[in-house]
Length: 60
Length: 566
Image (cartoon, rainbow over all chains, first blue to last red; front, side):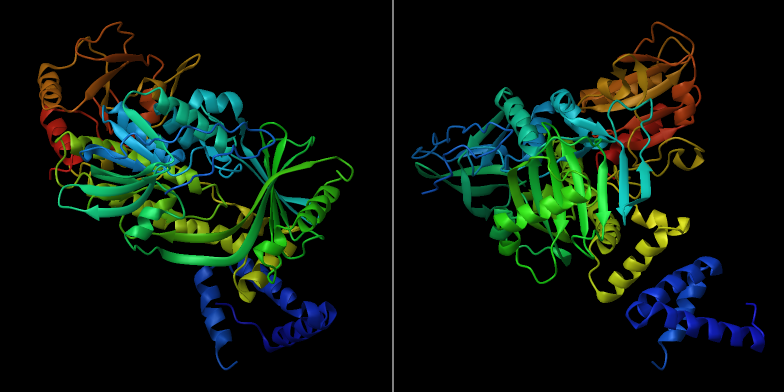
């Protein structure tokens, strides 16, 4: 899998935070699920998405 | 004593006929014995009875009511259901009155986000879907049953007890004039979702019940909308929930809408609540002041349940008595027709002593696996239409939102309509034929493909209650060895017809029962076959063997297998 540079990761960090604020707390969940679905489509692999979902479930 | 409702049910569009209750056997000195008793005169029970009659098997149908069912209930019949109804002789009446359609639409925020058009292939006689209210279908079937000397419908007869014996079942039946007993080799339980027979045998369904509840309401209204499936997600008047609309004959419209989570069915069916919500839906569609009248309403919750075995000693389950399937995807009655059509020839051959030990049990194998496949598919539709948990709701809502701009999520609106099941794993399929060596054509276990032969003339019109061998030939005769084998099959009592598909414009093929002309090669190419090849077709129109070159010995083997003798 491609890895992002630290700079890219910092950009993603800010984009995500800004977008969550923009979505407002009431719509944050909906926004994140939309984003997850769009990311899955860009990823093009149900298996990788499943692995990512399992990683995200850790240490909640 | 059983007292069925004696007054005709109320309906705007349907005149209910109250049939006289049968009381003739009350007080009879002997207990009569029948080969088959069908319990339930709904669509599945009556189709079973008429289908048995085609095979020469007489039966008694017991119906606790004295009239056909209340409300429109099942309103969408698939092409496959129409083909089965054609076999039992009522399809013309259904298509004469019904509304054919082939498109479905899903709307979100007043935008059409998904549209599906089912192909109307030129080789098919019937539209993908036909809308007709269930009371009409039941009436057509009841009239066909009354006219059939092999079918005796006993209205107002309720089964109150059932005792299983080694080779028969004894039923205790209550009527308005008292009770009587009846013995039968086989009971076919087609008594619906609240099957009394299932309860008497204390059988449990396995699977899932969903929380989401829907109101089903029929109204009479003149709407300028096409006959298509209309689904509205998250409408402003019913946030988060789903509304479905279908046109029925006679300017009747079915409106299904999901209830808010905390509402009881009693609250939902109150006249003011119904009126307010139907008006809100009509207003959303721009029909604010169009007058309408209520015909019937009910509450429905999605369930995806099946018995794990449809045969319990002398009792065989079919239709909703055997399984409860979500209405999304029109899987109720349409699954039931396939059940009874799979069952009937097997039961008839068993009663005639033609079946090996595996034939009747294959009904359970084929149809329980069909039900499980349907439950799996229906679960997907139901989880989209009426999300069962917070997680499912959130993802569904995200898909709705994305669907306004993102093409890739739109197929998730697909409602996975009922389709003919493919019995690819059936023990009745021939394992030593050429099935795996075909590149095209329907495989073993699949439904035969219909073919348009001429104006108002289709292959399925030519099929009867027997095995058919579709034999592709350019010769003027069926080979002697093959014909001798066919004669041997017939003399054992198995009904069998050879349909010669002629590839050389022959006007006669000696030994064939029917001729179908295929000089153009259309049928041969659709079936992926050349001269000397053949398809063996079960009496329910499913394929059990196919060969590129058929020999007499191969036919012998395939027939033994499909009769459950191996």
